Image (cartoon, rainbow, N blue to C red):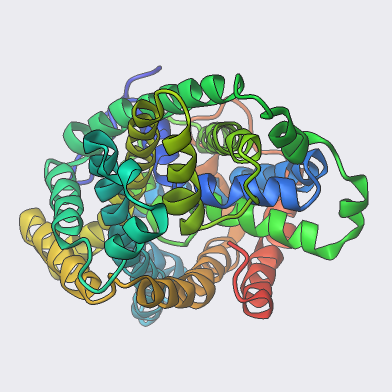
Length: 448
């Protein structure tokens, strides 16, 4: 991949190559939603038929949504707060920047809110990793083990470890920390999940899982729920929050083709989701267990399966390490969005911003460790705060800053200008759909 043609203007540094940028963005996008939500939705809402609307939405959101967040971050040369200030200053130099900065706090708080809840759940994952290594998780009833981990202050040491590790990564900066870690963890995620998926394929009865996942139920395409869930899964899977991907764009060189990089990110994110489905659902059906989604799938259903199979302990270790890798790279992005904005807005030293973000995440999160509490917290943030931030981002980029200006930035690094279809899809499909995601989230009490 090509190296940067010139040094980034950002004080935090820059990605060393377009590959480093893409793999870091894939790390941000590939998270727990790919692992515990996509496999169930794929089978529940039409199997292979579900993939038709899902692929359409993934392409649209990646092409014009993700690329817009990358581009506005690169244009502003800063993350959330500075990017919104840049957008609104374009229409009112005197007061617009201040208005944009105030609005930018909404998506930024969305990133912080998700980070707080995510760190709690990653504490459960780390505990499950260790329980797999020692064998304790497989010797204990899965429901009992999960209840212990998710009770009040049930996983404090593991919770602390998660936050400390993420802070250590982001403390070292972009190329030395975020990029290097992503280049290691994301390939390992794919390799480990592929190993599990291949092994699962040989389980007796696994074919029922493939039927659940991929036999098309074409009648599902006539149901609104199929399209709603496909849209929600695609939207939230790509981490289009009006915040996190903006900061990675701020570290991006002008020579990188952002629409192309966005589509590559969407492609690898989709491959990760499908690989997760191949690793999980055939095993679930091989043991005649009802398919489900969410934490119960990871921490109750799958440990029960690992307990029954040959070399189950080994594959449990592989599986939970893979999940930990996916979660850590996503959490890194959430932290970076907050840290960079605080650096820029309050002129903080990076180490102080990192420490403050870590302390807030840990102190608030410790009191949310009980499953019902963190569930309610994440529901509020993902149904209310994050979608509002995404809507603000879409409108700010394509209507406040304006398509003409953002198009200039999107065409940096490209050999040819963007097609007319891009502008139409961005303004008249993508922006209305972000509003629809917000509305439907309220109606369905969550679609992501």
